[in-house]
Image 1 (spheres, rainbow, N blue to C red):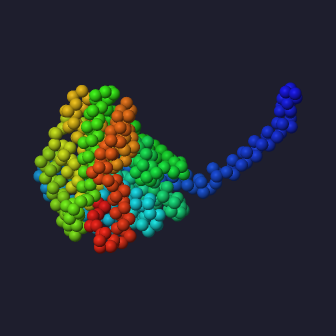
Image 2 (image 1 turned 180 degrees about the vertical axis):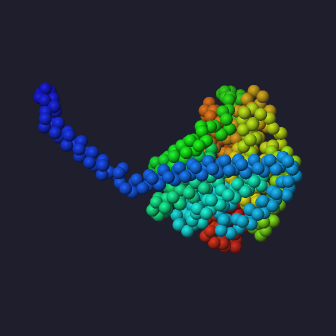
Length: 466
């Protein structure tokens, strides 16, 4: 019986049926969604968008380096010059961003989160229109030219979201839910291209921008991140943002250093977030004065930063990348750097000028880790610096997974994966005790409320999104 069955299977009739079945499946595959015109239109939009975001991130990064290099050259030649140019730059930026370019203020991440949470075409245009994205780049560069303590990574997220929205619309996509996916992909691609951290781009988009994972986002998000990353990789080469950090943290008493670092950096990250939000009675009055006199307030913030920068010898100006890189590679810096950079970041953000928080926050964390390293001589200094960066960033953003992945990819030290993730989780818990609201989502909520119109008198708040 078995032999007869094998004869039937190998018979010409069976071969004909099998061939017909394969032909049917092939025709079905040809007519499937994979070859549908609208699917290829979506894929083409994603490829073009990802490449555009990657190219924009590279141009932005190079331009930011040139802008701050020009400021640094002038400040080196005339050390007192920031006392004049920094307040003037802050005041001019505050004045320029009072009108149509108001959405260019701050880091740009709250604008993307707000645009994702409100599926309204008009609101999204006000947050992410192409002139806003291009203005964000230009004004952030001007802020760095003026010596502001701001970064370019948050603005790159804003630019990425705006460019992907514009490209999606140019390719004929107008459904709000579809455009949300383009915006999300653009934001993730911005982080991937800015830091050369593709995995962090995906995690950031899911944890920080979207706030949750949905299966239908995965293909779109990965496509944009991969294409943007390939473009940045081709133009800048394969590099590690802070260089490779050597060292490990064995399981033992050395983990006491992790607990202390997470607690200190988390609490200070929460303090920084609360200061940025201008929450509390005292800071609320300060926010009210800023709302009434934005240009003068920005000029005073610029003067405060200029004084701190001149007294520090210039190390508090700019993104803080050089100082963080130096510490991550085992270098030394003045013990007052962390406190001074924290104050410089707060003053820059209070001014309401365009600029991000990622790189300056990493610099503060590096300074804190370096300072705490003297308490634990048995732990390598670069390891404490890396833990400080991860813990402070997790405390500021309250996004521990994003902070952990970014810190790992920035330094290519996978041996510290578990200590860094533990540090970020503990720091996030410590920050929540000081500032219950996640920073970027609180700022995004303010943008939505401000766009909806003035709140009732008993609920109105003078605070701005920065």
